[in-house]
Image (cartoon, rainbow, N blue to C red; front, top):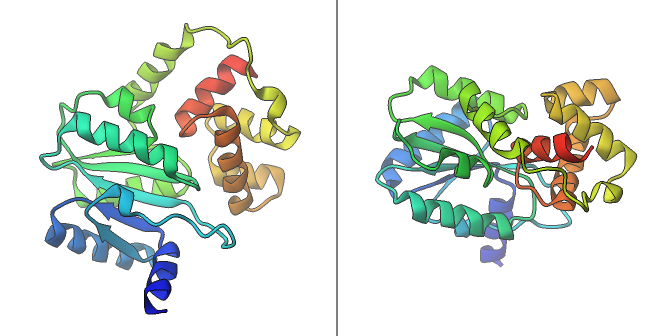
Length: 223
């Protein structure tokens, strides 16, 4: 019984820090808890993040992945596997990122919502965390531009999948494609931010994309 209670408690947590440096990551977890009021759990493996209870009111997870001395190809493979098993919207954030990180576009297109570099100041970190919680991406303008142009010449898909979207989902997706945040969408449509997140999760599943960037690219080609 005690084990089940522990699992249920983990399911309620919002922040997860993944990495092998337990001491440093526990300090970071304590800092996040103090700043946000949400609990944060430190894990050594991204696949140890518990699956969601389908009966619960699931909040999006924010997963901070420590890149310190991490093999980038292995990390990318782990993220691809995680994206196939996750059951709710997850915001994946990489921290302790080397400034010359390779494969940045591949990471973004596989669900990474933001990068924090090894020498970023602490105030920059919290500013980025707040942006991600608000439904934004913490990426440079150059990175966003590269992702858009790389995908802009691939043409419109012959079977877009837009027929599977509801009118409300199409409305929300159109707003996402022009850069609207979750709060802005909620205000415009007179719904709660949580309802917006639920719609986005359903949209991502229907059009088979992992994140906001890919959803925006899909909308540009198919709506």
